[in-house]
Amino acid sequence: MSKFNTANTNVTANRSGYPAYRMAAKEQLVTAVLTTMFGEPKYYGSTDNDIVRLATACAASDPDFLCRLAVYARREANLRSVSHVLAAVIARHARDFTRMTLRGVVQRPDDITEIMACYQSMYGKPFPNAMKREVAALIQNFDEYQLAKYKSAGKSISLRDVLRITHPAPKDPEIEALFRKVLDDTLATPYTWETELSEKGSTREVWNELIASGKVGYMALLRNLRGIIKAGADLSPVLEKISDPHQVRKSRQLPFRFYSAYKMLEAEGLMTPEIHRALEKALTVSIENMEQIPGRTLIAIDVSGSMGSRISARSVIRCCDIAALLGAMASRLCEDATVCYFDAANGWSSYKKGYQIAHYGRFDSILDICRRTAFAGGGTDLSLPMRFALEEDGSRALRPFDRIIYFSDNECNSSYRGLARTVQGMADQYRSRHNPNFWVHGVDLQGYGSQQFFGSRFNLIAGWSDRVLPFINLAEAGVGSLVSAIASYEV
Image (cartoon, rainbow, N blue to C red; front, side, top):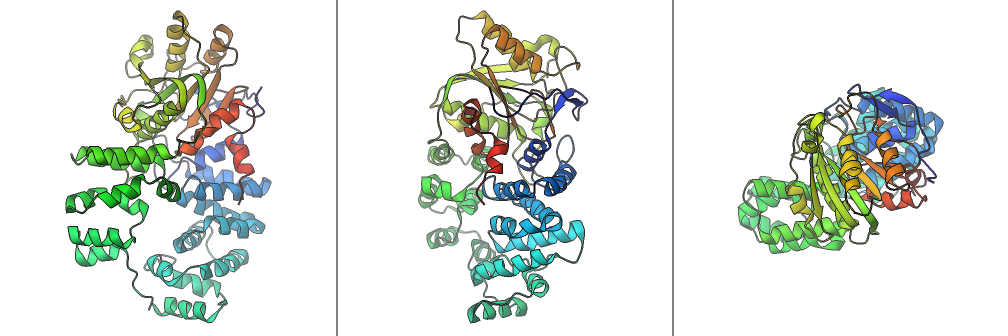
């Protein structure tokens, strides 16, 4: 029996008007926070207002949890903007937690300017004294290079503005001199790849010099692979760094960053076996020490129309790409995995045309699995994988599935039975017919606030990071959930 996600029969309508179950407030907040590039549109509408509303309520009822969620979003999920929003809400509504939150969220000088700009846009002036005190302390932790690189000149809140608002008392003469440079705009121009390319151009010599200098960070190398290749620079040290396990872990990149680079190079005919191996190795670093998922697993990847939306206006990555990538990574962890790509493009009356079945081994290439994913663009019908499990699997002399893992936005709008019920009943059917210990894991990729399953042996997860995958085994062991992990997260 699960120790969390107890039965919830509170039926509501999702954003498509289809029956669904309401999430508990913390689950709704967590799923919305961990699946957003705040300020970017989503297929079924933004969740920004939901996040602010739920965070404000949480600041009153459990500010400690909200603080830990803000730090978790910044440090573990690598989501900056939404962590800034949560920090602003805390500064307004839970001021006693401002210090702990800012110390966990602020990692660069522009975290400070963004949080203060966010607060000003949401609540106006004046800034709370607790925020000003902590900012005045934190800004003294950065050196001249960092302050110059992230001074946010020309924006609504710059570092110069921060000093004028918070009036920090310098802790030593060196910091005092540094603050004077910020106020006088005399900080030394930092040696960065941006300034060098702007001054000298994107040439082979410039890139080789930059790479040798060590001033190009991991993410910058990943994002600039195309330019480095086209300039004819030496790729060997670049690929060595990209695939180095220590560098991968230190960079804390979201998995889709590697897939984005892969897609871009593939589209322009720049992919080579060496680059493929480096990106593949980088992707596998995060899961190589994860516990294997035992037994037989059905991995259900949503490729419906709503999953074709991009995660941000500037990104080439779609929700279905993240689903395919996390599904492929999960398949590498599974003892025995069957992968199902599903949508309702052909109508729920002919459900066998609504999914594709694939069998991948634990050593198949993650990138190759993603590349073979076919985006279909039909309706979202979460019953299709369950029908496969019930009817197709039930007709064979195979070991029953131990679990199904959905990678979806959970926004059901199609069903072979019409729009009259949730998919929960099919999971109950499978338990009664084939395996009473059958688990359903829902990895929510958009955070719209509703779910298709509830009760024991259901585990709700959310996020775009490989860090969601360990919660499959933890949930089945009854020792952890995403919400409980955040509640105990060390800040």
